[in-house]
Image 1 (tube, rainbow over the protein chains, first blue to last red):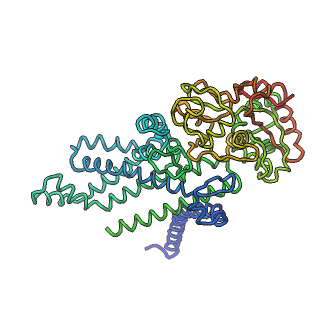
Image 2 (image 1 turned 45 degrees about the horizontal axis):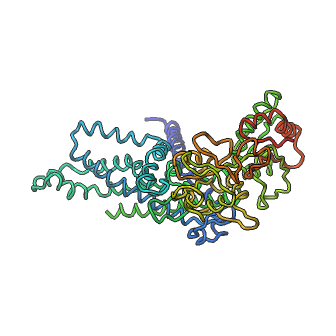
Length: 289
Length: 251
């Protein structure tokens, strides 16, 4: 049995280690808090001096002349994001179903890492491909300048594939084997068992995948700047250009001073609140099951 | 100011490339002096010169009334740059007047047919708000006396001269404006009011769309800053500017 002094020494050490780890754990939250405080401190005053509704629903953005309306960019962000989901999610789910339920083990072994490799490609490379391939294609075959909501959605749709596929695949794999066996034993074909049994069972995982894909699409900046055209208009056609909230900040930050710069921070505040709300909604959907 | 400190020149990214070359040459003659040339944009250059973060600010447009306390700043014009309107090489249009440009960029004219081209839609490419090139274009083209025209909202926005040039290079219907120094052979520069933008036409003051490049300082410049100001107007800098497509402001 250790002497009481020794025991105390050990306890003290344990406590110190625990306190140290706790501090490290909190440091990441601290950084997040500081970022939030900083962005809000810089951005919120101008929202209120402009007027919340004018800022959110105003359609005129001329920051060097004192007009700060970001409604076109909110619309642009939502259009591009949902456009990307419309294109990326069905493909991702079909690919995942194939890989998880129908592919031979060897095919799966080769395809899965290749798809994951897609995530390692830097976004500026996607943007480059967008400018060289997608934009001229849209311009020549569909009209307009090619720099459009459609081009951005197509590109982002491809960019979210690895995220959505990986998580959907994992959630399909997590469905117990007995479900498949049960369905087949009842006379269902493999396709019927996949659509009626496996997919519903993996629903919450798929929703998570879609949410993460949405976050990826909404946060993407560089590649979108390169293909979206960045005009501050409310797009009424998929062939119109648009500007997203993230693009707005990245585009104008270099030259902004004074109120213009504050307005860009305010754009960041709005983006932050939007992503926060979407996350809450998404978490609620997953929990409801 | 501490003499150990490096001298900082910050501001317009249009002025930056030529300033870097001038300072490179300057350093060959004055090796003991540490100088940093940084970007940030014209507005940032004005702010930096005002607050003293930079001893010299670079600015590629006229100072505006809205600029904070511009009276405190002394602008020294070092060079003139031609804002050049560029189109795709296949475009048959060669020449536009300033009045036509104003109509084109404010969205009043939407087809190349109306300015002597083919019946194709006009695709406008502009720079982002706050850019010096955009500010100069607004000042030189979009203002007609007291009337101020707004850029067409559907104009595509690029955040660099290179970006504008690349879009125009790829799109047969595009038109944009960039600094003369960044024009390449893959795009066609238009004549404005019949004058081809070039070193000579800027020098002879024939070409209309010309903007000044300024170095700004607050109060009396330090001896080193004064040396740089003098060197920027010296004949060595003249040659460097000519290579960059700029005309020195030195007499």
